[in-house]
Amino acid sequence: EPGKLVSHEVDGELGIVASAVALGVEKRVPLGVGNTFNLDAEKIWAFIKVKNEKEATKLRMVWKRNGKQRMAVDLRVGKSSGWRTWSYKRISKRDAGEWTVDVLTQSGEKLHTMAFKISADSSTTDIAGK
Image (cartoon, rainbow, N blue to C red; front, side):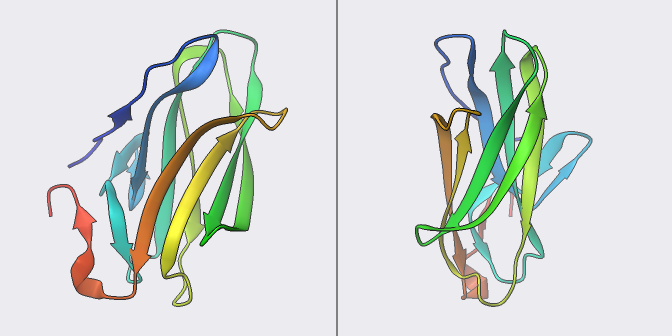
């Protein structure tokens, strides 16, 4: 189901109001949202909608497989009630496992974590609408 986001309550000036893990992002909307993917996926995208009442800042997405950091991406976030941004990870045949994407502030405070699984079994895909 396109654009299916999980909403989150935000207290304070900076936080994640919605998030999704998906097979793609098109026109700033996540497509193929799910929490279990298979190795046929070329890329997995982590999508967030950010409430930022302060000046523009950067957030960091840290991608981890089985608890070990694999990638980190810095993303610019402007002043907005719902700034949309994302990063993606190319998937290789060695990437089966339990994944998390942590969203951190510039000072290292964890704002949010998204969790998903990449299965080596192609029949276990769990994607909304499929």
